[in-house]
Every structure is written in C-alpha cells, then in structure tokens.
Figure 1 (tube, rainbow, N blue to C red):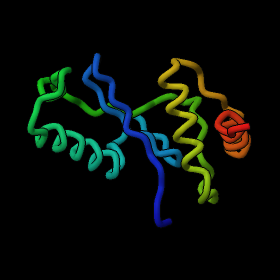
Figure 2 (tube, rainbow, N blue to C red):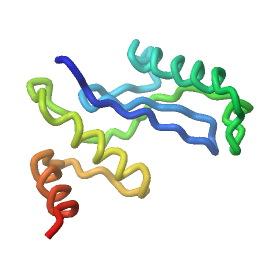
Figure 3 (cartoon, one colour):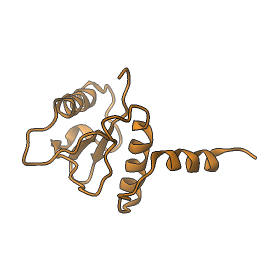
Figure 4 (cartoon, rainbow, N blue to C red):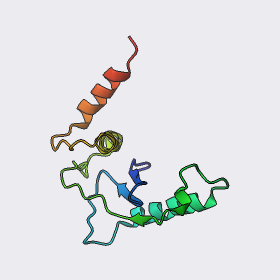
Length: 121
C-alpha cells in the first residue's frame, strides 16, 4: 500500500483529537495504534511551530487524544486496497453533520453519488 487515507478529527470545544483509519477500530481499553499516536504528536508539533497564533488560540488548549469509538462506523475490508478515500469522506460527512453511520455503507455507491453531485451538466 503506497498511500492510505485516514482522518484526524479535532474537537476544539472538548480539546480532543481522534484518528480514524477506515481499516481499524480503536477503543479506549487498548493502547492507541502507533499511527494515531504519531499523528497526534505531529498535530501538537504543528500547533507549537505556528509563528502567528490563530484567532481561536488552538495553542492554549490542553489537547488530549481520544479513540474514536463509534461501533457503527463501517470498516474497510482488509482486502480492499482502493476505497479508503470514500470511507474517510463518509466518516467526515457523518461527523460534521452529526448523523449516524450507515452500517450498509457501499464505497462504490458513495463514489457514484459524489460524482453525480459534482458533475457539471
């Protein structure tokens, strides 16, 4: 696998950061995946390297890592090497809209729907 989409979820109000890998389900009972730990550390480093403070003062928040534990989030099958993008985009849609995940998620249908919405006629 040369490249793989994942999602870093930043909850500013709660000071929490979560990482979603479409092929892995983390939980709070287990040590976070090493990639999640590295991404969280990179996020903190990025905030600390910022030369000009953002308007929302992200550097002043005491950030913590919290596994994303929605058990209804569909997982990308291990044999599927092509659809991490649709799984990540679907997760981003549901998280930003506050809607429930669809356990019957179909990445190809998602691709077709996104194409239909963005196609210029």
